[in-house]
Every structure is written in structure tokens, then in C-alpha cells.
Length: 377
Figure 1 (cartoon, one colour):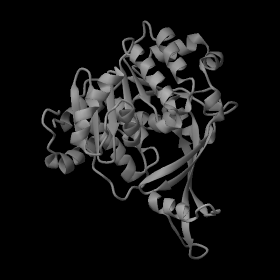
Figure 2: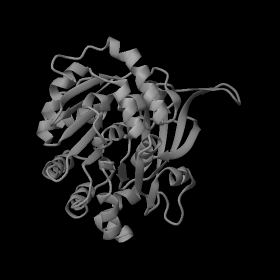
Figure 3: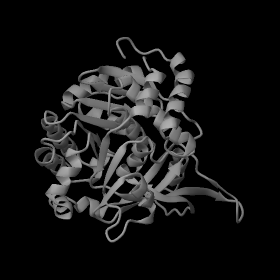
């Protein structure tokens, strides 16, 4: 695994480029912890593991259940905000296109008016998140997002403004497929109407919870993206749960062992017809690229996270930032892992100084113990 800390340092010292994130997105996260037992007015214990809470639900059988919750935070959420926070903090010129408030920007998004170019055309969705040490349960209300389509986007911003936004971006990133019925139409219209003559070099996708859509929808979307990959190279990023669904859908087995993923991820990439597939898990990240082959790098697993909600989006932000120029596939994965790892341990996304220091720490801690499978970068 060839990861050069000095090269990555120079990369972030000189980094420039523009990433546009959208489209049908914008979410306020109400994050809660579920109380296990109330001890006193000021003391209580919470469910730290999802399995513990699931077992409590199962024990209720067919009866009712009532558990106290305590608010952990109210914050921005969703693909554009979480990923935009990561790219902007790394110094990337970031455009966020989505639903952050119609008459006025909701206060939870105010910081992005300083960090990014914020373009809003609707009211944000609301997601109730029940957060545990090992994961989260997300229950979003997304009616406005579900109803959104291409005609509404054009009506809100106009073709000229849309063409300027997308043609001036190096990377266009779109999420989440699972909550956007008009996803195929919107992506197709962008490729057909907004990219010609511009500088866009890549589209990046985060599907989110694939189980929210039926198998035919997934088949149709993969077929659509395969046909558009010749217009602009495409990257699909998947966490371990999303990867399991996509791999199975395409007749491949997904396992949480990095060497086994290396054997199948290129098969998945070829079956999708996309330029690049990325998989990120709490233990490793892997990618298959049409031009660069397959790479896998370990994640420095954190057993006591400060914050997990948004970690996958921070990974994506790190990966896209590392893809603006000429970092190798293994270096991109290392940067993305470091961005996510830093976020999980500290509760906020790294800036340029943080990511360089994190990469150096990562190499010292992880690389000397890592032996890649034969034939893998």
C-alpha cells in the first residue's frame, strides 16, 4: 500500500477546485438517545448498542412500548450538508444546492452561508435520529423531497442558472437516491442539458438506504447510470449495508473481510458499467477503478466514537476532495478514511491541517501492520 504523507501534504496545500452537491436534499436532524433506565432527576442510563434496544423491542412482543428519549443535539443533516461541511472545511470551493428554507435559511444551515455557496429552493426535511455507539436509527419525513422532480428544479432556478452551477463544477455529487423517486430523470437531464462545454469531470453518487426502494428501481437506475457513464465518468460510493444490497442484486457476495471484497468489487464495477465503485466500512475501504484497478486500505477502527451520524458523508467528502487532482486510488481511500476517522473521534470534520496530521498519524498506526492481498494496490 503506497501512501505518501508528503505527497498528500503538498496536495492539500495546493488544492483547488469546485464541487457541487445536491439536489433534492436538505435535512434537519433531531438526534436523540434512548433511555434504558431513569435513576434520578439528573441521572439515567441509555442504550449504547442498537442490539440492546432491538432486544427490548422484541421482548415487548405484540404489546406497547414506551421509552424516554433525551435530545442529544439539533443540527443540519442530509447528504449536501454533511458532505459539504467536509469538503468546505478541507478548503474546497463548495456549492450546496437543496432545500434549506424557502422564505429564509433555517438557522441550522446558517454557518454554510459563510463556508459555501448556498442555493435553496424549498423547506428542509426533518429526520429523527436515535443514535447509539455502534450505529443509528433514522426516521425521516421527506414528503417535499419525494415530490420533487426536474420540472420543479427548472422552475425554481431556471436553465441558465442551473447550467452555470453545473458546468463550472469539477465534480457533481448527488444524493440520496433512496429518497428521490425522480433521481433517474434528474441525473439524465443534467447530463443531457447542463454539462456540454463545461469543466465537469466526474459525477459522484450516494444511494443511501437501498432497502427503501424496490429491486426494479435499483435495476432501472443502474441501467440509467451505465448509459450516462460515457457522458461523464461516474463514482458510486456505498457503505457496508448498501454494498451488501448492491452486490447481492448483481449476483455477488459481500463480506466484511477486505480480501474477499477485493475479489468481488471489480466484478460489481464491471456489471454496473460505472467508472468507479467505492465501498467504506468501519474496518476498511475499498475501490475499483476502470483505469487504476482495485485498492483496499484499513480503517483505524474507533471503539468509543464521539459522533457517528455523518461519518459516511464525511468519508465521501474526503474522497471527493482527494479526487479533484492526481492522488492515487489508495491515497484517496486513505484520505477519506482519515476524514471519517477524525470526525468519529472528534465530533467535527477535519480542516486541511487536521487531515495532514491525521494522515501522518494513520500511516504510523496502521500502515506498518497492513499487508494487502496479492495483486491489490
